Length: 199
Image (tube, rainbow, N blue to C red; front, side):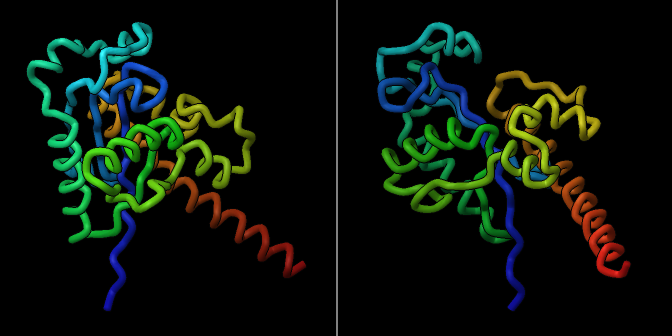
């Protein structure tokens, strides 16, 4: 039986504060790297009255409008889980974010709080773009800002809009290009190693 491939699900969150619980995730976007037709987006009602104005300003979302029109978190996260689990017909979903710590913190907390578990697994772990780039290229952490990665991959004009759906699609495109570059880097290292062993 053929093993299904991994599907790297790029995830982006817009929130109104630094941590979930006291503050709210206001929107969630997901997109599968290499498959631009596979996307998900939802906005969510705020879960508290607390927010950090500077954080809220980043997304430009209107908390009062979200209270009136957005789905409640339980409904939104159930829909998100259904979408992720639906991918299993084609592959094995793997969480991907930039940074995985921040986006993953919100997504894992919301999934566990409102659906009982995360479709990405019990720890909510996954791939961090910057860590992946460090491993692929051997550069230092300071050289792995997403803007620098995009420039290295020839994607410098790809916008980052702070709309969770659009930014998830951006990340999916960057990661697909990073994967292709990593294969080139690995092949080059293998050729160098082969020549070294043969000398």
